[in-house]
Image 1 (tube, rainbow, N blue to C red):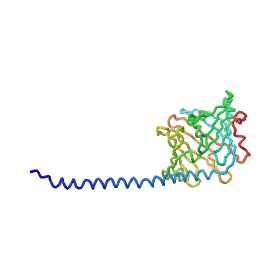
Image 2: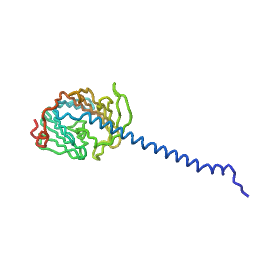
Image 3: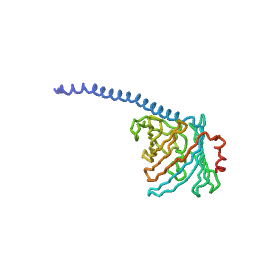
Image 4: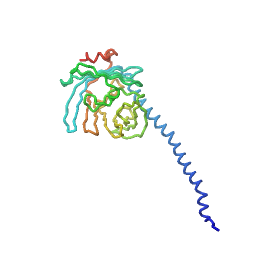
Length: 277
């Protein structure tokens, strides 16, 4: 007669309980992660909401800028341009950028109507062909005037275009920043995600990392030389976008800016592109 060893019976009797305890621990751990993830999403949205709120109420502005294009080998070309901007209640901002120098781009104009939920409207006028071209949504990831800024980078920041997730606090220069992950909701965006460093005192963007659709780091934007206007609104006087995959870079240098210049919606219609001077 065969007798099963008592040790095997004991081991077998213990296995179901051991399996159940491991399963229960994993289930409990996963359930604990749900409120943590929700809290990080809520905190990320709260940071972005405060960032947006602190830049509300500026009305309209006119600015003069330099755009410095730099090749991977360090060769530079400089463009001069003016940007008119209009804050729109209940909608995204409107902006009109006019190029003055050099001669080969003089008179080129770029118009943007940003929207929180609908697709942004963008048009580009090129005097060399005397034609206004609408920028299709599927082309929004393309380069703006041969720079390292994309067309979608030239729109106003709208909360509805992203989902947010707070990642961590981190030192940035002499400040402390929130690091927030922004995921575009638009399938035509050229980015899978954007990591944004927002300073905790004034809620200014200090740095942004842009990741392509393959989750690879594409570009890094550094913002510096912030100055305050009207005792409230902060503007970076240097924005440096560096392409991590090609070695090219573009600097936007804000030379001057004026607020409350009396601009209206009529200055930002499509017809304004061809008469822009």
